Structures are given as structure tokens and as C-alpha cells.
Image (cartoon, rainbow, N blue to C red; front, side, top):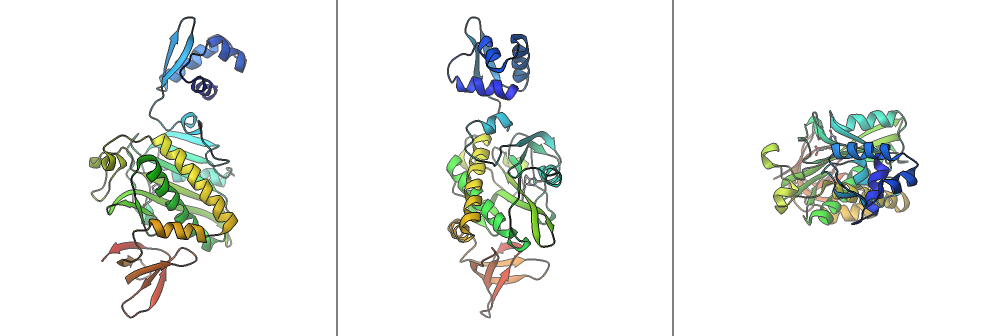
Length: 318
Ligand code: BTN
């Protein structure tokens, strides 16, 4: 009911909505409406009440509440179901459990903060409360296990584009899915999956973005959108834009295949054409990053002219 009241108040734009109108629309007593308004105020919504006029929503809290994310969200299925957590170990663990329990495609888990944010290759992800975006999405693609990298690259493209649209920051992708500004890390993507034989059952795409995070709360090599723009960026708008672009690219992948994603990834890449080293337990490779292969692996030409494809690892500039 609280979601419905917020929706109604938002639809009234600048105007007031009387308790009677709300009570008629949703068949709830005016006393109950008053109780919900009190609760919403407790959640951080600034709602004024004027005798004879009614209620007016003056400001929403700076939180990733489902009501905020879903208001005006233009997706078909991404984010239609949202699990919102104040503090959580990791949104990956919550989303993975939900995936195991049969959560529908597009289920979004987002949290204000994480106590055990996970990064790639066993690293941690700094997740101070109310500062960043920490979200995980359950997808159920019909992909073979070997094609899952495609989704990771697709997510990097969507996040990069969303960042540009909402903040104006022209971030670039370091293979496979680090989002950087001038070589400093702004966002990261982590993919976990459950599979049966070689077919994917579900994939969890985890996205972490340093949005309004002060540098003192981040690793030395990181940056945030606030640092780059010198202004506060709306986390809600960013999540909405990510969901929208992610769904568009995901639809495109399923209808037209991987080529469009690869092309866009290349345009946004900061890795191709550079001399790099890929560090990976199965063996480091050094040379020029020349292209992506059809699966999203990085093709490197080493000093003997041999072209090697890497499907995992960490890229270091040489
Ligand atoms: C990386 O670049 O190493 C990946 C970072 C992924 C961080 C996000 S934050 C939301 C989700 N929950 C986690 O614990 N990790 C991912």
C-alpha cells in the first residue's frame, strides 16, 4: 500500500491529494492512510499535510527504494520485481539464493550498503552505505556455459552507456568488464552462474558503481562519479538507466546474436590496440591486444607474432 500511495502522490505532480481520494481509490480507511503516511515519513519521504487540501510529496529520500526505481521505469521485465535491502553481506548471495528458489528473470536485488561486497578474482568491493550502487540481477538466458562471457561484456556496455547518459562521464571498458576513467576504477561487474551439464540455469549479474563515494572510502586506484563531476549523481536514475539499457542489449543479443555487442564493446574499450599483459593462473600472456574473439575472449599478439585468446584474467598495462 505504501508503494501505491507514493505512486498516487507522484502522479499528482505539484498538486495535493486528499486523504479521501486515496482512501476511495484503494478502498482503505482514512485512518489507515494516515498511518501509512506516518510510516512513509519515517522512511524518509517528505510529505506535507495541509487542511482542506490534503497531502503533497515534497521530496523523496536518497535511497534505492523499489518505489523510486519503479516509478517511470521503462522496462518490460528487468526490475519488475525488486528485493531491497538496507545492509546485506553481498547482493550476489541474496540474488543467487533467489535464483535457486526459482526467481523470475529480471529480479533485481539492490542494497544501500554491503558488509562483504565481492569483486572479481576473490577481491573485495568497497560498499559504503548510501554512497554507491550495489545491485545484482537474475537472468535466465538460453545460453551454453561457454557463452556466458557474452553477458558480462554486454553488461559492461550497458553500464558504460548508462553512466555516460546520467552523469556525462565518458568511462571506458578494460577487458573484460572493468569500467574506468583515466585508468581509475569507477565500476565493476561480477557474473556468477548456475548450470546443468553445459546449459545455463540462471546467471546473476552483479554491478557495483562508485557514485557519490568519497575517495577516502575507496582503494587508491579507484574513482567515483562525484569525484569526476564534482556534483551529486542520482543513484535511482542510474539504476533505472542501467536496467533499461541492459534489457535493450539483452533483447538484441537474443534476437541478433553477439556481433552488435562486440562492436559497441570495441568502441568503448580502452584495451584494444594497447600493449598489455594478461595475468592469469593458467599462464600470463604479453603482447598487443588486437581484438575480441566470437566468445568475448581477448586476442593478444605476442612478440613472436602468435595470436593467443584469453578467456579470463587481469589486464595490466605494459
Ligand atoms: C569487480 O570489478 O571486481 C567486480 C565488482 C562487482 C561488485 C558488485 S556490487 C554488487 C554485487 N555484489 C557484490 O558483492 N559484488 C557485486
